[in-house]
Amino acid sequence: QVQLAEFGGGSVQAGGSLRLSCAASGYTFGAYCVAWFRQTPGKAREWVATLSPVGSTGYADSVKGRFTISKDNAKNILYLQMNSLKFEDSARYYCAASYQDTACFTVTTWHNWGQGTQVTVSS
Figure 1: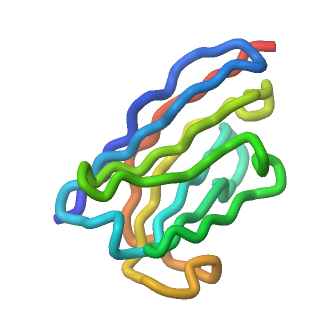
Figure 2 (figure 1 turned 45 degrees about the vertical axis):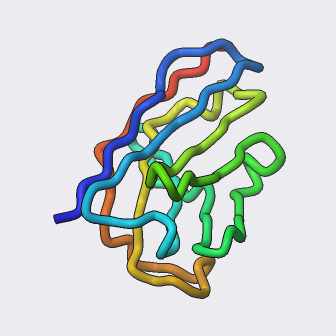
């Protein structure tokens, strides 16, 4: 059974940084397409970034240049480094895992989700 657990969220002032982590059991981040999403109350879940097994990355325009998705294969942890945070980055952030290992930017089914970690940015 796959379990994903995010941590590292918190409250930060605008302009600050946070690093989110996602640990997995029963799943290997290095083998498949993985991603981060975020959601605020009353809005649809929004894609943030995707990472392929070979290290290719893609980002939403709203976070490009400020956020970095990465992974530590040895520790089997997925990261999201968030710099220059803005008020509008406040959301609950989720890591997502697929069983697709190619064409990562066309993934439509994310099989596993964590419970999320809250990020609050004060202006």
